[in-house]
Image 1 (tube, rainbow, N blue to C red):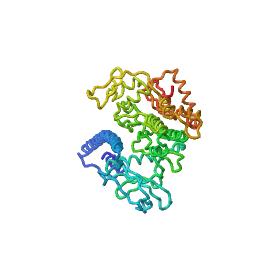
Image 2: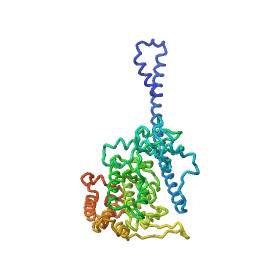
Image 3: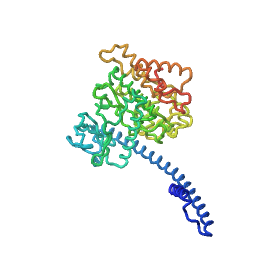
Image 4: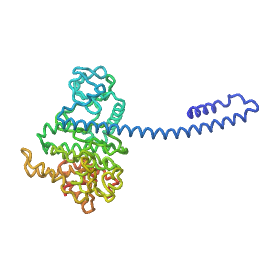
Length: 478
């Protein structure tokens, strides 16, 4: 109404000369009416400003609820997979609510002008079913992701599409890095029988499947792995340039190309702007979750570097670095490798009192304990390092690899697996030496130090760490 009032006022000024004179005795009344009208317009404007503020708050709350919904849905999905695996059952997700998934038939045509033909089912995830499709116009292979017919999941998918478009828009800022970040392909999206459908280039498999198929019971060959780790870091560099937190980095969300030469970071359903803070201790998959999340400390893009470090260890060994049924159990394992957390971390964390007492001692909680009382652990230096763990797991070189080269690669992988695996307090004399080591290892392993600026690889030195070293320089081999 305020806009309409202003518009009417302008019309009045433009036609004032042609208006008939006011009848006697009415001039004062019109002046009063005009004043009342102006006061009313001011009030309307004030009300609009207040309403705008309330609307902004409502949008922020709604966005946060959507983020929490995605986090919980993914967490429940992982729990169901673990239980099915423990019972040696085949993992068939979504059978209890089958109508929400779309089950396509081989040979079915979909998309505008029926331009995609279903070749085979790829699988199901939390939010969708995915199919290998052939482009009938160009003959190319695509992966089409059909979102479940669920209101909240549709909204989450719409946000994911927005993120892909944002990444595509930012691609020119780091063309080398964005080669390793998946984006929408061809027509991007379309509707099929009430299901939002996302189109991607077809890739070979995720790194968890690759680990099972090519790892032969262990990790991937180190010469191959060094290339993949380099590409993961380049992808994270690109996300950093775009100011995006992935928040769901793990082997399942890193895809291998058809020629097996490259990888791409995928699944941006949990991704967010670097300025966002979701208040939950369960953001990120549990085994790849950074301690900032568990403790409720303000976080940034560094949490992806933590996940990259733990993923690197897993791809090298075939084993998960930190395991546990709860955040508390996870941190207990972390502490044995990284040592005591920085003081400010356990003091300011919103959830810190669940795990640390006022003296900074860790309270180890066993969910199966009869008493239910925690064991107070007085923290000291770590009992082992990432290098110790890798040396124990990677004793023998791959066929055709010299032992000296193998041992050098293991040390370098320990440096990289320590991207975020430690939060030890650092003194100035230690910092310079570790910076020198980090520079050397990145130069030898990745052979691209000139194209990857040191600051670009920094996972972020958050305010909570004070004079702490950046992620990639913490928890190294010393």
